[in-house]
Length: 306
Image (cartoon, rainbow, N blue to C red; front, side):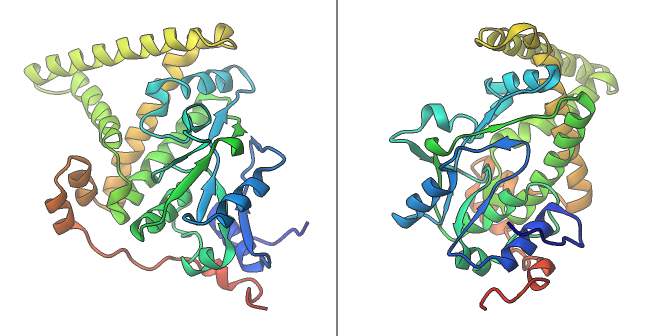
């Protein structure tokens, strides 16, 4: 085991420093707050060696540690918590032990040379850097495979404030990813900032709009309560299910506010929104070539060719 300096002190720069020093044929990313199966790397390498994919990962199995953390884990097992992401359900619903993912990915195993050829992780993405990289892979026709056997137990945040901050950043960088890689946006990504705008309209807007917005907020509140009922049916729910509606609201509103903040900082994802709404011709017209990957930490290590 080697401990390397990360002078830029961010996740993507640390990943690039490690990649620059890597010497093996394969590279694996294994984040903290997660328990991986003993054969995680072996399964990933075996699947890569079979061909037809250059990115193999496993699903995330949310497992709480603390009352809020356990409530978040329960929330992520509901439809409102998962959204359109398949990485939370692959362990249960994978056909023949595997399925394909979109840009919603969780860590993974890659051929080192290919990861270098793609430019490593973009260091302008302090969050969501794997989804940004997945956008580059998908744009070149790569298949992203998720193996049920590589399922890892992920421990969510255990405070509402840290959960809010996490999803605020997720929302902003998901929006930034959609600006650069329009094909990474799902329709569900548009619903959550729409929810934030609806909540705002329910508080301060002309009377007819305010009434309609309050109906929308009431329907959303009912959906949250329903998710809490669904979560309570889980075997390990206990009293934590009572917190599920609250943590879902924090996750959704945090993501939505972050997404809207991203629009002000990184521009509106017009091509992505058009594509998500099925307006493919307009999306193609609005799309532009992405800029080069910003990865200065790749040059900070030893020459990977040595």
